[in-house]
Image 1 (cartoon, rainbow, N blue to C red):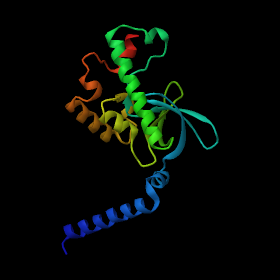
Image 2: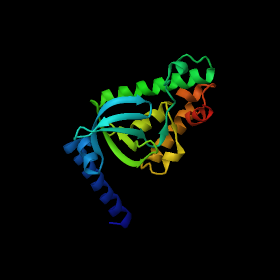
Image 3: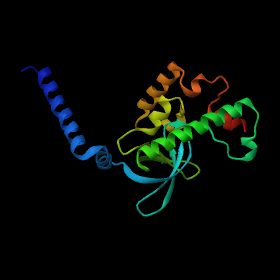
Length: 192
């Protein structure tokens, strides 16, 4: 047998082992095994922030790694704004928030966190996955409901997945990518 055939055979054995492990223990346990911890979602604050509760009953504010979702209105003045740029921001922000809520519901209000950093507001920056392994940031990017956020990308283990999802959504003009009034959330915040 040639060296190439041996490598292929070894790769197939490892692939089979991973499939077997996933079948026996499920993605939820596999994520626990590789270091992600499971939490109960208490609240979806917006399209890139959730509050979770750990096993000790403590609340933890979590900011999604890798992405920045459009803003939701935080005051009655913002809700009543007639500016096209505000209306666009809040429309997409509410859609992102609703999508995160749908995903959380789909996961039975449980998520797996891979915490990568803490931001200046004390929030844990984290990759957020459903119990089945679905990366929420990848879904939001793929659907045009969030943009890759470069400052949080450096510590994002799944950066390539999120960047590829965004590139595809942009190419297909999905979500905010089809809205000529939309400005990135970081630019919108800077203007405020």
